[in-house]
Structures are given as C-alpha cells and as structure tokens.
Image 1: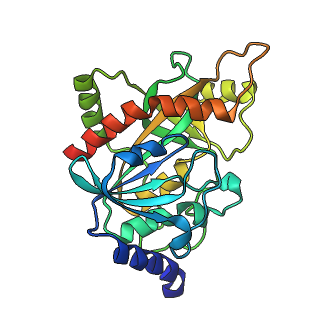
Image 2 (image 1 turned 60 degrees about the vertical axis):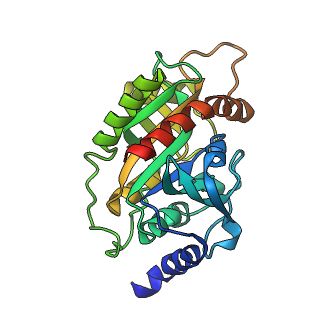
Length: 273
C-alpha cells in the first residue's frame, strides 16, 4: 500500500513546496468556467505538467492549471480544468487530484460543470445546485480499498452537503440570483446523448446530464470531504427541432455567460464556510 500511495505523496509534497498555506477549500472548475480562477488573488499558478503524476487536460475550455491563492477572503486551491474518462484516462488518473487535495489538508470540495438540461423547466443559462447524482460511469473505488483515505464501503446517502446547499440558497436569495436544484446524471461521453437517452434519464429522475464530476465526488466522499456541486445548464435536452445539433462551442459559450454569476456565488460561499 505504501508504494501505491507514493505518487499521491510526491504530488502533494511538490505542491506544498509551491503554495504559501494549505487551504480548507478546493474548487474544480469545469467547461468554460475556468474564468472563476481569474478572481483568485495572490495567485500561484502551477501548470499540471509541472506536478508529479498529474495528467494533462485536453478538453475544450480546460486550461490545465492548479491555482493557489485567496478567494472570498480565504485560501483556496482551484483546478482550472479537470480530467475526463472520455479522454482515455483511467479512473485513477481522473480522481488523482482529489486524493492529493486530501493530503494537503483540504476539507471542502466545490465542483462545477457544464450540463445538458433534461428537466423541461430548465433553460440554457440556468444554474442548478446538485442535490444528488446518478452514476453511469465506472466506480473509481473498484479495486483494493485504499485505507489511507477511507473505508471499503463508502456511504453516499448525503453526498452533497446539506448545510452548504442551505448557505448557497441563502446567498442566491440575497444576490437575487435564481437557482434550480436537481439530480445530475454522470455519463462517460464523449458523444452527446441521443434524444432517447435524454428521455430515459429524465424518467429515471435526472434533471441534468454531463460527462464529469461524479467520479471526483465519489472519491471525495470516500476521503471524508464535504461537497458542494453546481451545474451550468448549457443546452435543453428535452425538445428537438429538426435542425437541433449539440455543439461543443455552444456549450462553452453558454458556460462562459453564466460564469460571472457562479463566481459571485462561489466566492460568497467560500467566505461563509
């Protein structure tokens, strides 16, 4: 087990040598949402390629930087871009940064993503608090349990922290920012979903659908982190005109347009936790 954990310790050791203080809160920024990192002050920017054992982010809109600094008056770590199973990475590689964060002393993980709306009350540009998820990806905890981080059977009953959700709803009300709340469905991608798949997962209880987040969240819960998640609804997957096409550039554009609101909400949440 010591040999298995060596890469985590090497990555954490390198980051500790570069950052000023180990923060309580980390943020993983999804497609088109990396601009939130621009709000971090006193920032140390570390490209993933410089961090031992980190993978390289190849997805559109993911810059591939680890940023350490101040947001909401508190020290934070931020991943400006994540790794996806569809890029050809293993689940170990996809979730590797989360365990490194745990070794750095992170207690809270905020995750964001761009997602397709399958709840017919959602519109492109809406922000959705993730209250729960449906996992349709390989579980990243398959294999020998790593007891350094957690127990064999990880409880997922209250995956998304209820107190964080309450605080975010309070903040959104104060800022007069409308929020949705729902269930995120995590698929592998990289193809967008068919109309039949949108309908199927809607009937199964899903409100939004995407290609990330869930593996990271599972590993974070295994490690005992408190989690808050938010999706930007970038397209409406419940009515399909004859000329409808899911387009990656449109997803990035819609995410960028919502980034300002999300930055305000995340900054204020970090200040309160």
